[in-house]
Length: 394
Picture 1 (cartoon, rainbow, N blue to C red):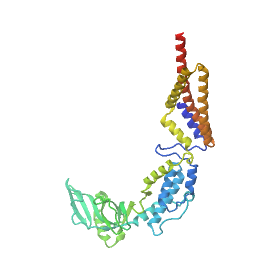
Picture 2 (tube, rainbow, N blue to C red):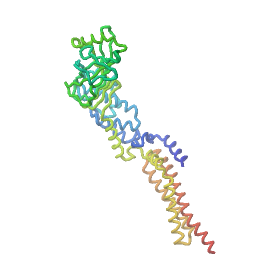
Picture 3 (spheres, rainbow, N blue to C red):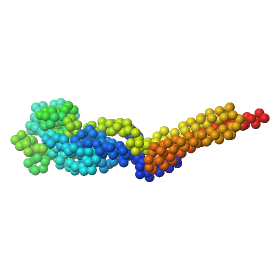
Picture 4 (cartoon, one colour):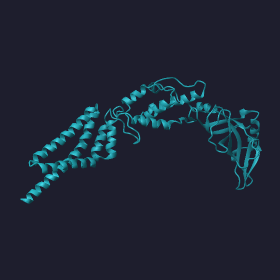
């Protein structure tokens, strides 16, 4: 049985019309050259983010890696366009976007886009108690406006600069960033920033959230840093906020130095799966692939053999009970079962196209043979029992 399945799988892999092996069992199969994919490429989607995301997930399910990358570049450009005054991008079909995708934004473009969303300002804290480390021989002392040092056992361990980061656009929900402070020596210091306290609440334009920007003191010239912090109020060019990730509500997108991630991608995947599941397997070019999946997953060989055996047993009992020409009627029952199996195979083949017809016939023949073998065994049992009992009676 496993050999038969392996043979069918190997032959299917050689078919130009076969769908790719489905990578995930929770996703419908779809062939890259199917009617569904051709229709998808003709659909208008330029500027429609929800449609583009569903199209991207559909292409990913179909294994169209290059097309997915093309739409990723389009989606990244769309995100940057919506952050500026230009608004939505060019109208086009999905196929046109795939055929001529824009260049992907580079890291510098992504940094500039993120830096345009937020800006820092000093936030002097009169008392850092409750915010900075306490206990364990820790002592916090002010070093400059908004700059505090945490001392442990009398030794400076951690530097913390309190910064209010203001949103320049509505709906900034999360921010990961470093604060670069230029020292008089010419070598900048980078402080990692985190909200103080942690807060997931969305910021509107003009609102600010308190952040702690910190670094270990071991490799930092603390007097130079304190002087630079004092000079920031008069010379904002002395520091620069460098976001590594900014998450927005409108548009629902996460920007990072690695690229753009649309926050609705999960919902788009579920929609793509639902759309494909609602389509006929012929439209998706995946009937044979899904038949293989069903046969491999459900292992119908035992069920087919059992069903054939029960049908044969019923036919054999009827022949023994109602006729004396048992061999003739048994041959007729076998012929009828074979004709029925061939009729089912013929109908299935007639509904398929190209190489799939031969492969489908092969697979149906393999499993039809199992059912027919069960039928023969079930049919023979009453006939043999009647023959043995007849001889014993004589």
